[in-house]
Image (cartoon, rainbow, N blue to C red; front, side, top):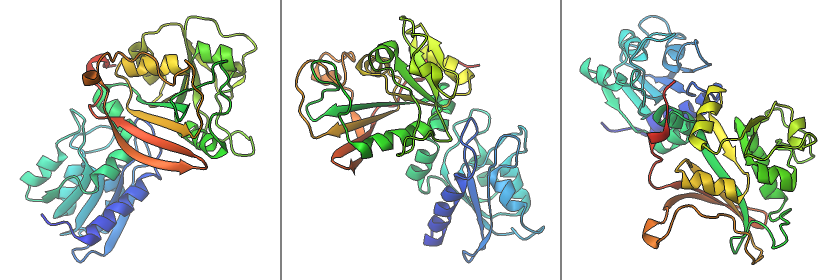
Length: 348
């Protein structure tokens, strides 16, 4: 089926609508209903658990019969099951929609299959329209659905020669203000920020997300500390606006499953080389953020330690998604070429 420019434009609009919905354990989904000539009939988005899904929200704004022969453009495959709300595939069929375009396949064992239901009923269906943009929007939710654990981003700052600190251990500041502010923006978008006890003892970080003027942002990640050494009573993390979580276990899959039960979907790891290396070695990294400063430090304090790679053939290959200049620094965003294994995931 040929996808028209007006339908691609509608998908861009649906993706923009989707972010109006809350991020969490339910996906952010947007929908646009088009006349056969491409004119927008209605729009909708999912406003959270228990509310109408995006397609139903858009259809509810139309009179009976007004969607007959229309095209539905949706960011996620219409669901095929009854939960707190009915199946969207059936709602589209009942409305008389003749074409459906969507960006991302539903990975759910129970909820998937809406596309097949629509096709069997004679509806034209096109999958993968602006699929990359859709997967980026839903990346953390897709990780939870596919692997049963939170989406993990590992961040580090390094010199051009790959050092995270000078030989004496000092590391503030390797990168400049623009890079540091980008980190705070990304912290605010995460559900939890994770560090090791070594970082807490060495740097006493507050683990907050702050504006350029130093004021606390409205959205704060929950602080998480992993390690066997105790966190001092006067540590800055204990004064965080949100109650910190402490894990003495180095069983990272277990920690992630515990965090998922706490409602955490997006994990931001920036706890130093030891913890970052442990997540990489365990195959639990979905995204890497490397902030690179044009400085040379030398010495032994590398940004990453042992990640279980002994030969060049065993190198963990990454796909470089973007490179952005932040002041004098560079931000490299990369994702593992091979998707993380669901072997450590647990069903609740």
